[in-house]
Image (cartoon, rainbow, N blue to C red; front, top):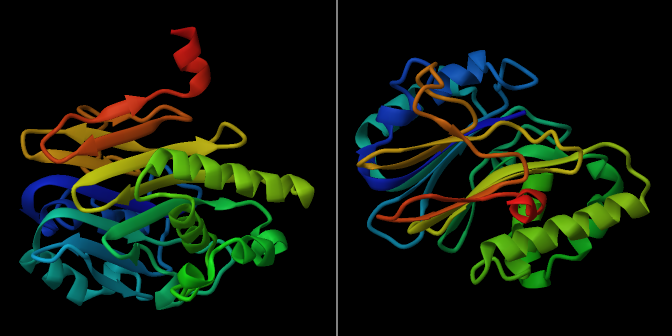
Length: 261
């Protein structure tokens, strides 16, 4: 499973969160503590918002721990919103096009998890993506397919509703194909001004997801970057976190827990 980080708030240098902390994302690329695999060396990527509405991207197939350009870039780039991701491939090629984040227009998307039995439904899933969006598909991952299908399902207007519809469609395809492997979906989406994070899984075992709010902004991570869970809050299983610039994060509980409350 992959590891990632997302930030929304006042402009900061990427290095402060991506490289410098004790258990930074670069450190996690070799020594992840809460993933199935300790090493996430199948590429990395960063996406950030500067002076333009659309984000910048830097992705490569090198392991994050061995790329001096990544460290130098993070020391120089200062951004109000950014994503960073280190990849552990789950059956698709190690190519630049398969590295996260994925971008479309003003949106960025990162994902940790996988569609169980993806190779068995890949062609049918791709067929559901409209031609204009499919023409932008550059890689072969399930993550990129999820993102493009969510865009087709109205992600710009309703991120949560679009993702719910997309995940329901995927589960339907999996059931038709009699796939018993799990669909796990821990992901973050942004348009540069708002952020939505998801922690879902059909087997109740979604990958880890934490968040921390400060005076400067909101940080969302796969695992705490300071090596200490103090000050970090867990996004509950089945939960969704939403935030806009300058506002507080709002965590929506799973339907069952909302009903019980």
